[in-house]
Image 1 (cartoon, helix red, strand yellow):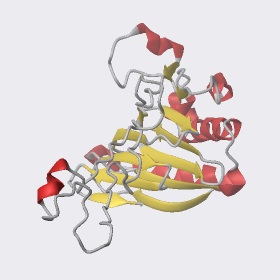
Image 2 (cartoon, one colour):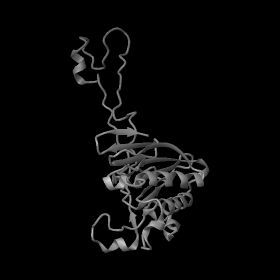
Image 3 (cartoon, helix red, strand yellow):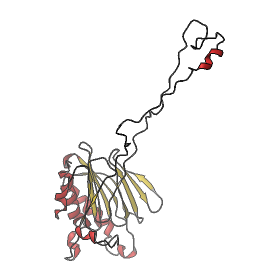
Image 4 (spheres, helix red, strand yellow):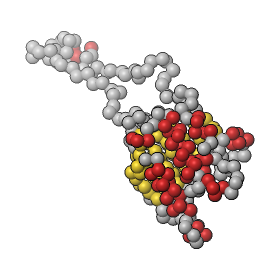
Length: 261
């Protein structure tokens, strides 16, 4: 396992994306050689006036100098002459039962994983035969997303690659970081999506997508993590978005399908 897993739970308020770029994004920047990029979360959107509460304007209806001519008694006190004081309803605007806006999602690239304990959504795209794996501890509020490409690190042919590229080393590294961030595997659950059969030559032997799914099931079982939902196989690519606050994994297929796990 690489040292990446030991970096979990870094500076407060920061989100770390684990995994080296092995050329999948072709950005050409030299920072890829470091193997780690740090995601700095956006500000929470509070106003700069130092006041945490939004100012709510409370309009008052029914009280006006024009009331003197409204009830015919010449009084401006709103008395309609029936001996009772008029009750004025004061509506309050600005309060809503709508949930707070969802924070900006953390993007996870190929051969990367990310851990969050802030409830930030996690997303990844370009899943063909690759597999997306979500692990979530609802009790402690820790979540992780891994996007790996191949079942076993032994298939790297001796080349140096990120642990996150493979199911065996990637899942081990992510679970280690998950625990270091405060998650507990005994109360964690997992969801899988991806593992499609994308091209004809992938059909000759056991497809890579199927092998990725089996490798993930094996590694999670060995670590005592229950798989509660899957959307795997087929021949279409997928994109994923996971919301830790609702524990919902939205799977969008390249063929136009959409499913929530």
